Amino acid sequence: MNQRASLADETVIATPRAPKKITGENKIKNLKYLLESNIVAADIRWSIFVAACQSYRFDSCLKPYPNRFIADGNKNIDALREVVDKTNSFQLLLKKMEEQNFYRANEDVVDLLHWVLIESPEPRFKNVPKKEFDTVMRLVPSEVSADYPKLIFQMVWSPESSSEIKWNEFSKKYGSFYAYHGSRLENFHSILHYGLQQHMNKNSLFGKGIYLSSELTVSLPYSPSGYGWGRSIHGSELSCVAVCEIINHPDVKCQDKDSNPSRSITTDSIGGEVPNKYYLVVNSDLVRVRYLLVYCKQTPYRVSSGAVSWLRNHKVLVFIMSYLVMLAAIGAYHNPHAQRWWKILLRKFNL
Image 1 (cartoon, helix red, strand yellow):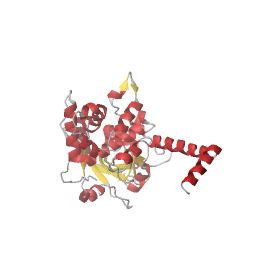
Image 2: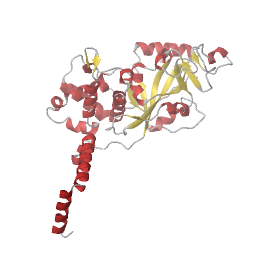
Image 3: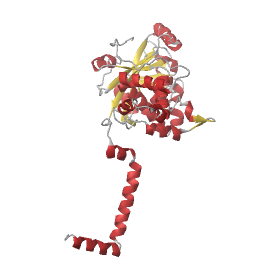
Image 4: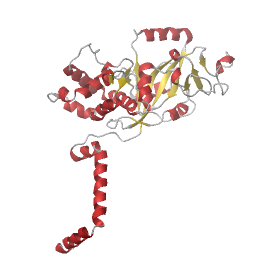
């Protein structure tokens, strides 16, 4: 069941590894290079991070968590969200990076962007061109047609890493195949850093583990649209589905009665056998995210200036001011003195 895509080389989110001590100017250079070379992937990665930040479950899904927002073992989520809210669209940031003293005025934003987009560990994001979408989707032979994603990214791991070497050894021994896994948008920050973890699964009808399917239509409902980053060029509502490679190990439960009848059921299942087109992985070392399918719902964010930009960034204040104006208008309408002056004003202008 081994199937692998042969994709043309595309731009990868990659910059030289950050040294232990790096100046603000170097951080800006790294970010500028990254945004100029692959703003599409950088925007998605940042949007996934923002979704985890804004989630009420941030304590579990925002892993890893930026150390600069941890004091005495306590996570200062309010301070982190404040920096996220201050972050301008990437197009606007690229323009502002040319200004003098940009780092001094935006140190917290630059440091956080650098941590998320450059200092974060593997995997890296590699753009898959639209002409190669079919190649990726054919990795999972599905019987039911489903909507194609707007974007696809390949997850790139260093072939010299110990985890990848171990994976290749298992793959040669047992073989591998591909399947889909759906999850909420805010979960993908942790998934992309640590992989799918069996202990994080809540669905235990057929046993504890990681649930995947050979049908995209089965996994899509588990990936509802979530609110990411309001200034994203892809829109604020996104959903992601992972295309995972699975080691064809006996511990991976599926319908395989001909060769191994016991493989279709787990000892802790309360729903019986694992259904057809489902896979249940009880060991997270046997599954790895290889591609990320991204679905976009809303109209992309567009940079604006002046009053429009101010109104967009101060929605709560505008709402409060509008409410106060409405209350004042109601009060004036019922005030006899205000009504008398209003009639005088109307007569003066012959209205």
